Image (spheres, rainbow, N blue to C red):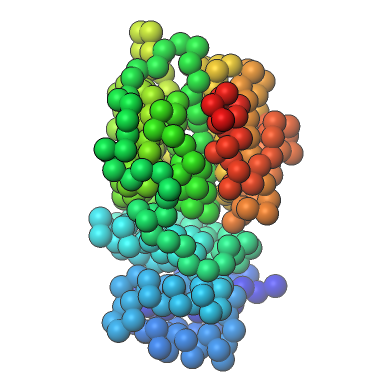
Length: 354
């Protein structure tokens, strides 16, 4: 089956490049190109594409407004194509909240891995989007979506260093994970144990992602840079440029970031984080694997379970892509399968805090 793609971008050069890259795949075909939202709307009606690639910044109706209307009236798989800038990352994170499945930067001549790597990534994201389960409808902005306190004044207890034997939560996610992590963390109290998170996303996005979650959650959320002391009530998000690990530091723990080779084709890798949980924390750790394509984190979660840690996997019905949790469940790594809406409650119950 050929995946039929509609390319939407106001740049004629970008439309031509994306079309050429997509058409290089024997399983894909660009059925049309649109320079703006109005043209795209008509082409969707006449061409009935399987997947859209959508520019964020367009004249007239921008990509966000178009996406919001699309997901309300005719939900379909969308891959956002965005300039990986600070402003672009904030906007694209909003697009993921609205229902876009994947995001990729615009092609650049100086990109690591060259054009071939970009083409491979673009084709993979289109395939993932085509097979994704659409959650339907626009979601509220992160900062307005939570019942948890959004401001630091709502954080009644100051963070404190945690020591050996205390509980620490480790979370891994990929496609669809920005929303799944949002839901999980929205259910966590300010006094929750430390939480370390790996979410597969472009390098320029993780700082913005952490800031947006910080506006949502009762715990504070930050992008790890390496060397941070592990403290209660704090969420550490892996930076997009490095693996994230937890290591012992005297009687406590600290973060470690490693700009080493990708693992399972990912940096940061969930397996790297989970393996460090086994080495440094052991039985008091808890592992959660969420929606995502592939198998990153599955074997690390199994090693966590074998070390005595509690382990949880997101259920198929609430996943955008039931890949990573399915692989983890298949090999016996998942102790309990849980819908994302119930995940925070189940984790807190395992912590004895419900």
